[in-house]
Length: 149
Image (cartoon, rainbow, N blue to C red):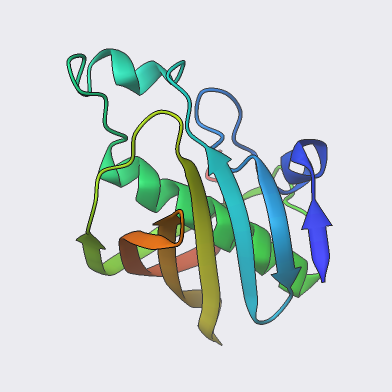
């Protein structure tokens, strides 16, 4: 079982503050699944406007956090790290559902399981949980593509 701290996560994701949404990998079994963590704090820049009187993490950012965990799973499965000539893109989001709001102070657990990999497209079943309770879920489609320069 693979675990990763923030410094190791940075080796697998091109994202940086304020768009890095994975703080650590709690466990990963390449080719199968990953469980990662995003600590949600009041210092997140999106809380200034979403919503100032009752801060809630935007659902699209929860989905993005799940996609970042999926990218780490993909790279570990391929036994490679990202290169500057390619990016790992979303190519589809299906069955997205949001069950409960995510607030400052929450530990957002990102559970992503590889469902299928065919012709360069990866399909994942993803769930976000807080204190063991489902807050969001989606089916994610991602693909590695060359950067257009």
